[in-house]
Image (cartoon, rainbow, N blue to C red; front, top):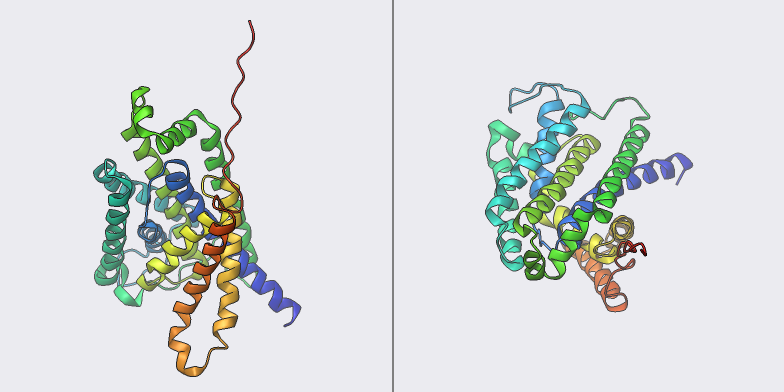
Length: 314
């Protein structure tokens, strides 16, 4: 492969990893810090992607929108829309136990996906929305410009989540995760903190969705299948280290490296097994996850507890 091809692949790889890293950070707020099982990541990812696409793409008679608004407006709108959707869903499901919350979020994500699939006036149905512009620059080097935007976005998301982790707010979330009854007995409004964490994490997922739309330039309901937008994100967080923001970033790199590598392996399958390639890739990621869990149950990077503040001696 020529040098330009290697550089192009590296840019694509790092851009994709950056988007998944933001998804993993959002999930870490909900599961790693608070203990909420969200199996509906794909739903918030799709809401962010479609919001940005409708607002920033060119006019199209086949669906609503096409306002040609700036990239940053689309990003802000995606975050706000995802937050509103999360606030409505969270207000309904905040009192559910983790297993019931998992079932509820699966259903909600599928409802969102089928809505985009069937409401053609809104999203152009299965034909999707095309010609979504790249941010700031559409020329030959637009891939490098997008990578810079994606890396800055990861830095912003990491800063926000890390600040939340070490703040008193993050300590309350971990207390809820470890012992909800004791936290409530200590006078904390558990319901309110759980809802805040759910909205914060979902807003990051919507943010990642908007970046994905501008990166690929085309979105359709197929892009938000649970295996691509939920299973892989969970594998990234669990393998990297649940509760550790650095682990979420590392997990995104490792799992996407394996996922990309499996593409080469399954390409060598016999022709009569080609239809099973997708399942084989999922199986290989699952094997990786099993190996990590057996050798390092807390993930590659275990959770780091913030240092306690020592009391001054009188």
